[in-house]
Image 1 (cartoon, rainbow, N blue to C red):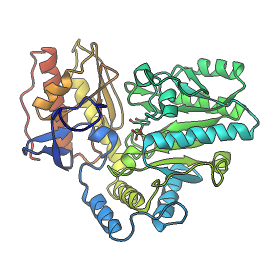
Image 2: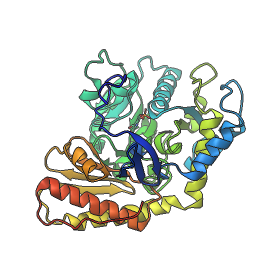
Image 3: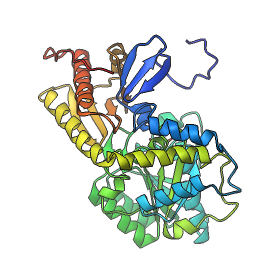
Image 4: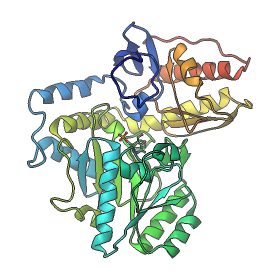
Length: 403
Ligand SMILES: Cc1ncc(COP(=O)(O)O)c(C=O)c1O
């Protein structure tokens, strides 16, 4: 597989996938794997969801694309549904999370210039992840993502996460700040969860200084944390929200939603995308929203998340190699004391697809459609593999389930 004509940007496992079904992926040899992170928080409804497949197929026979120089019913419906769900006033559609964040960053800069701030700055967080374009990798708080791509983009100020005093001191010292961009739960950064008090304090400082509060819900959005957007459990309404990943369940789409003054900042010519929000992507996203609503998946993310968290905590009770187990809905992290990237190939041999982030954190982003049995199977398998890895002899018997 190493001889494939692909640029060498990923450390891939040697598996060739052929098809999927719910939480399962099947390789070209027919071997099945349980997916604990759904293509990095993308296939929230599981793989090959029939309603999404049908919507894509129907739309492909009507209209794939016509450019943003015209309207389509699909784009209008999706913008309306997302605004109703989020409390925002308008949507810009892109093709990915990074592009949704680029739109937010440009919007904030434009907002600053409209306020006669010549060098507008955006506060971003340590250990944040916002994407791989030049502006979003600069906003990302991880040197590994940035190294080798200097010069980085100017206009970002870094602050520690969950630290209100740090934001206040930037506010006191820097008159160029126009916005703050943060994730309600840092996924790539190792599953750090913002406290409601911090977010409410950030909102207050934003209001005092006329900054835009911009939330990156690329990973947390679309029901994953147990509300459509994570901020809906915090008592805070942002000015700008970005999302992508689970919105299309695998069909590429991103959105930058804005309200109030932020929703009137862009004017024709300021920003654009050839493919963004084309009828195909919007039809897929509309089908995703229908299924989330029809199957009550937001409430399900809460109960499933609590079940998985509780089972993991009791399985690892007293395990000295585990530093912490935490979660917010179906975004969960098992933090080990030591770096544990070698768990990934070990889990693969056991038929389990696992993601490790921030070196020591096993990040779980399972499908919102798991049955209780599937969720319990996932936990049993994870516990087995982690105990095997840690040399913990209190092993659990191998569980089984039908695909
Ligand atoms: C919070 C967050 N923002 C932005 C991105 C970038 O999204 P994309 O890879 O679709 O550009 C990611 C991807 O992991 C993310 O987790």
